Length: 246
Image 1 (tube, rainbow, N blue to C red):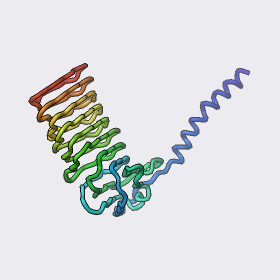
Image 2: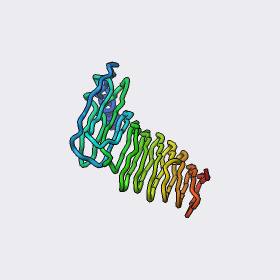
Image 3: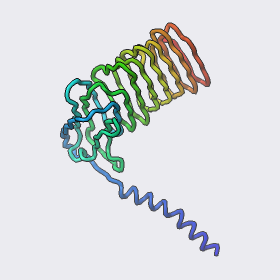
Image 4: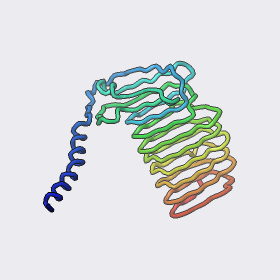
């Protein structure tokens, strides 16, 4: 009786292992053929949110005319790149059940400056070539190992940085910037001039900020906040965190 129970238990343990092995064996593997080709996508629908998830290096140029997405990658990888608009969000992603070994993965976005929310995940990078100018709130969110390089001229900013990748922001926030920094990669917003800035840092790296009128800073854990602000309204420090003037 004991041996039967043990055998049954071992079979139960083996099932998920076999399923895992079969899943790995059945996963899609695509190796780029090194024949880099260009595909262009015309975007005719409107959207106010941008979501990028995948191994893309994206250059964005804000334009007033037609919206186009140009993709440069291996010819045999193009079919697995997904671009669609869903619930007011332009989504750019790669097929999730595959393992892709590509030679190049560059995307050039030419889109209107109506975007008020940007979400980056995976190992994506978004790099703006000109200034995003909007008269309302811009929301930013990065996670995983995504990176962000943006030039801004916005009224308000609400940003959450969870990524192990780096972020660089410059330009102007006319009223208030709220930044929550809880990632690993450094955030350089030293050239982003905010009238009021409220920063909460609990990451593993360094964030640089500039406030022209007022700064509120809360730092915890081992994060470092380097600030340029003549009027520090409130600071809170905990753990091994540091708050250092520039």
